[in-house]
Length: 218
Image 1 (tube, one colour):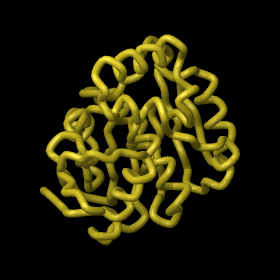
Image 2 (cartoon, rainbow, N blue to C red):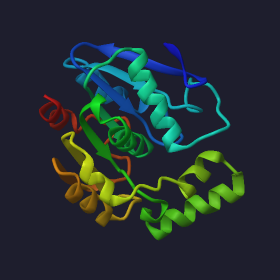
Image 3 (cartoon, one colour):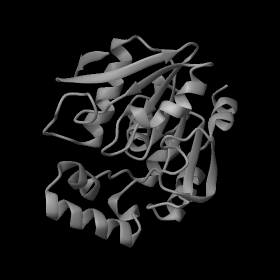
Image 4 (spheres, rainbow, N blue to C red):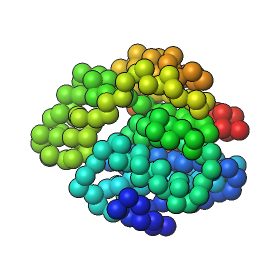
């Protein structure tokens, strides 16, 4: 389905039944990364899998910022009159989830932050070098976004009230200590580092976290 929000048309897929659960993908991806997980979670939740602006089947966009994308999601929630939603956000989707919980805490029930970072400097040196090279080779605005944003101060996370599950791969592209700092700062949170997994191997087209998410969000 398409919905006009914040000046752009966003595509989203609604499925399942039960309490509302938003699925927010990462940079350069679309809602289909959650297909395998969504098949199972849809037995218990009404899923809203959104293509971010400029991604997937959503309208092309020239302007990107995490604040703007978080506002897109907030207005989506308002337009559909959703109440106390759960959120699973991966990578860029985790940043958007985090900003949403800081700016509009009243809409979030629980959230899972997968592979989240607070600043570009949180990338490993190797990963940041790769992002920088690709940007200068392609001038892709989505890579520019990762070089410039987000800029979230760790201390702000002390204000998050929603129960939060922080997950990451053992070989993530984000420095591992960042995940520990995020989980330590959010008052009601827990952390899991997934052994033998990379930034995306445990979630993209993967349902290995189904039981854990079912337990956490229930």
